[in-house]
Image (tube, rainbow, N blue to C red; front, side, top):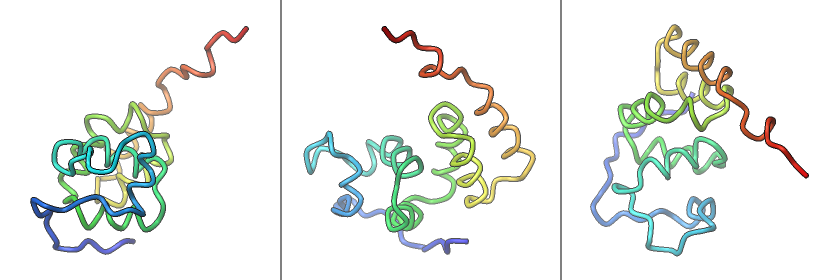
Length: 116
């Protein structure tokens, strides 16, 4: 399991280049670690590299990550990623199973889309 650092976010901290590469559609300096936390957390949880995941864990407290999982995780993360991040943040197994089940039951928008 990844170890959690006790570092806190400083006001002038920027997203490092190795993490910012996940945000190809944004200009450098337009994403704020505080204001856009959900965007950053979701993207790294979904497609982040190992180094990006370590940075995420060092940058945001577990409480913030769990809050994201409760509010948004079931809608945007696959059941596998949702279960992984819930496990890593110490979410009780009953809650993880509930979230994973809800994630599996969400409609598959792309699978039901009509293509010409």
